Image (cartoon, rainbow, N blue to C red; front, side):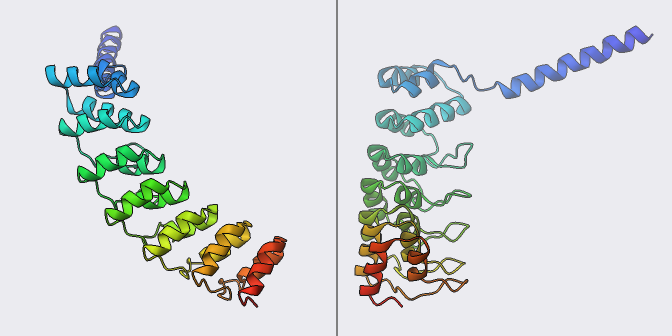
Length: 249
């Protein structure tokens, strides 16, 4: 009797594992289509899509593989095949976010033309514009702004495209964002400004650009610190001189 129950239990376990296995491996990560998309093999991708019926999960996985590598023509073919242009990857990034962050300008153009949501935010890293600004992707930034990207959008931590660019010292991006309407004196939840972030890290060129755009050097963070306070704290001599000339106190 005991053997009967043991055999029956084993049978149920095998059945359960088979079900789980079917669900987990419903997308064959080594499929010909996914491999072709990952390698940017457009002729093979086209041939497969033209001649075979592909399950949606496999189609999505192949599309995201092409996006990750920036294969623009392959991305376009998948869009023609009906994939969701705003499909989210496991890290919550859309194809547009990843392409903008990685400087895949042709892919950004294709995705925007296909109706990608230019202002969709990721849970932690914000919008495509924020990601591009942080990485100094100037062409992508121009494309996103032309597509009406919200220049003043905020991340969960209150950072914006401008503050991210200032923190990294990307002076040309800073100027582009200001020209597009970014508030040069915007303050984070802790009161810090783009100028303070640039000053703290000693980004002289970024500091110059922000001051030239009328950034207020005397705004205070919630702890009472000013841009000049930070410049002195981190011993940025040239930045101190620049701030004093701009009227910092």
